[in-house]
Length: 604
Image 1: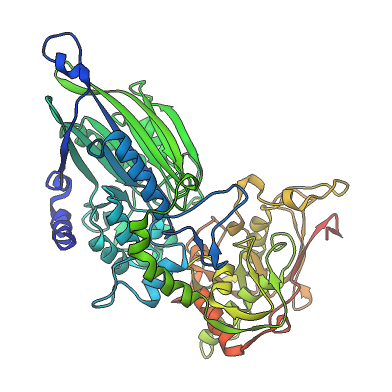
Image 2: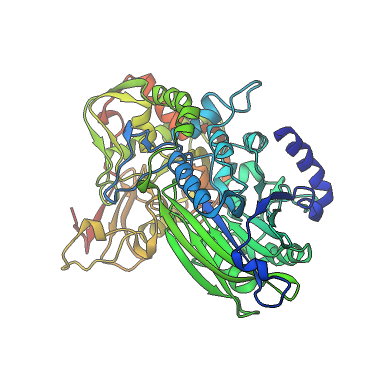
């Protein structure tokens, strides 16, 4: 089945808009409601009830397991995670609604996010000749997904890995706005159409349009530049939705890897909106419902009125990591010779209310155990416990470990080049508030829990003035707090909803962040080698690829001269560094580079 799909995708690059007609599938005949007996006698219209289920941002969560804690996942809200739980919920819904009356979709970010997905991309890669079938493909095939939109994280491991995963799936990966950079034709299936047969009446045709995030062009620039382009969601939906209606679609569902806020983290780098799902609902007529992804929010039901038709479009975003399942209940009526959507409602089901599906457990226990064994490998010993609990607002040694590893890697790479004499600074973010490296044995999972993303390392050249701007932008993360106001550490950060991963330490300099001052005027006493920073001096900044390509819209870095980059993950670099040292001693990497102040007085 996967081999046929691969052949079909190759053909679709040439055929463009005709791609999904050949891929349309029919569901078994559905049982009509009792009122259908009167159809044709003029008394009652024929009705049909369809349920569309959806997940999003699975990020490699098959089981309710925290690989970083080496234990069952738990949180204070009592959530549970994993496709094994989703499988149970899906089967419940199919029994309630009738399997033949349901559709199952995902809105992207499937193959990155846990040690499980890393393992099958890098340690035992699915791209090897005779390699394994990806656990996420195995699980989603077994559950019976009908389609999934591409997420931005699908591209993290490169196009070869993505295409191999696509081959292994028994369902299409959809991305109408992922186009070939040369031909401008769809590089993936834009949509799929499924036909539901209704007993005693005409079939119902349901179209699913997949849209992904334009930010891929920034975040995975090294992978997609010159190969793929990602136009805006609104623009492409306006192209494809009318085509789907003209093909006879009675229902149009959009699966969009894009949030609802209408905002972006692109800065001025792209003319598109990152979180555009609500814009699509407002601007593009002909859509009945949108499965929302990317934002990692829980939205049971959001109603948006289309500006042209006045019709209500229903949006829903289930919580990430397979913690929730969205249900769109769609009521159709056959009137005036055609099926029409009468109503749409959305709701969520919670994974913590069910147990793992035994079939998924049986299917993937061996793969799970392999990954558990891998992440528990010991790579060194720590002389003391390191924690990120206060790393957002104090200079924590555990983050200094990241910057030290990055500095060393870049210095080694630039040795003997024209840039070898430039001082090296390094950037790092407090990704995880729960990261902890205990005293004693240090394992791969300890280090993976510190650096939870699969970022790689890049070296960029910036001037002192540009570094100052960079630090000022980063300092916007802190809430302005007057000198005489009480300090609550939990309320000091995330100003303007800026996430922790968009706040940066910069090592190799000394500076204060005066949070009593307004944003843009907070960096004080900025020095290098004990002297005030020279705005004209050049530095090499060791920076992750997300930031180097413009992620977070930090100033200057995306356009700065790149002098080196590599494909090895920073997480792997950290493990190699610790393995080579044998001992993880803060004396080898910790430094005091910055502190928070208010009118010159330290906050802590």
